Every structure is written in structure tokens, then in C-alpha cells.
Length: 111
Image (cartoon, rainbow, N blue to C red; front, side, top):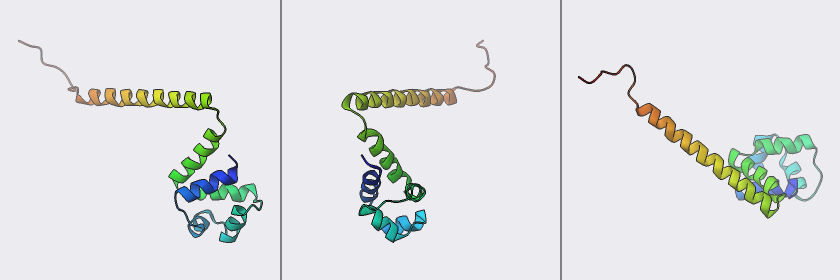
């Protein structure tokens, strides 16, 4: 997926207006409109647009770029790695919770 397409897909999905993005990114609405219509944009200006996206929209933009370049096998491998990481985090979180439930300090021997 092209950078322009990924950016505007994310903008549209998260229903951002040119005005909102313009204010957050410091890029004029006219520049955003011209870029949407196919005109070139300086990379530094493009970077400001990406930086101006809300976190969820920025994550979606990045995902579109990554996933758009993968074939099905690569995508499947990436999903398996993500699942393994989530399982590891869940186990770590569970183990940390068990540690918090342990009594602290010295123990009293049974009589």
C-alpha cells in the first residue's frame, strides 16, 4: 500500500477532518487537500501529518503499511509471533499476581 493511501485510509477510518489534522499537525488544510488529490508533499510535511494522527489512527496507518507488503505466509507467521507474545505476557501477569498474594515477611513454624 502506498503511503498516501495508508494515511488517508487511517484518516477516513477514524473520521478525522482536515481541520482537526491541520491543527494537530501544523499543516494547512489546503496542503492536506492537495495531497489527497495526488499532489506531492515534502517528506517532512508528511511526517508532521503522521505525527498529528491520534494513537489509534497512527497504529492503523502503520499496520496498513506492514500488512500490505506481506504475503499470506508472512502474515500468518506474524500473527503466530503476536499470539506467542500475548500468551507470554498473560503468563507473566498471572505469575506476578500470584507473587502479590504470597504472604510477606517471616513465617511462624507449626507447633
